[in-house]
Length: 188
Image (cartoon, rainbow, N blue to C red; front, side, top):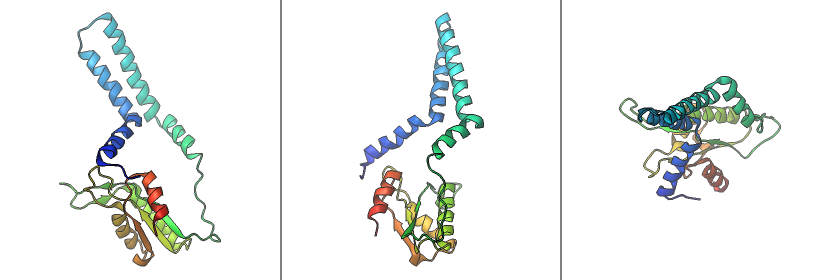
């Protein structure tokens, strides 16, 4: 499923609708707009409710007590992988986790922490002998496909970690996790 640039842009924007920070910003903006309007008893009541809602959203999403509980509910369905040395796999699949494009303070494109840590994990499993190949999956996640191919940067990092180039396979067409799965399945 290869999305056109327009639909990929809509997809990228729609993702922000589910982020708690987006909810907090929208609640804060509503509070600010109501606070800037002329004072009436009804607007004052709305202002109080919006301010209370903003504070509650911050409390429920940013407090470790709640945020850790939410993460535990999500992660509880998928237990961590336990490497069994007796099992062998065809390849270790490492999904990209983002890239920071070069800019005025960053002279070169850099892998985000998630991509680096995933590559380190994949290299560790490769060195443990779980599979003869390591497949790095991740393409250009920009809307117009003018960015860097994440899997190529991950390849450089894997080589730095001691994985030989001959053991690395690249999938560089995907832009989303869904596309990672589809493209990895058809990768040679």
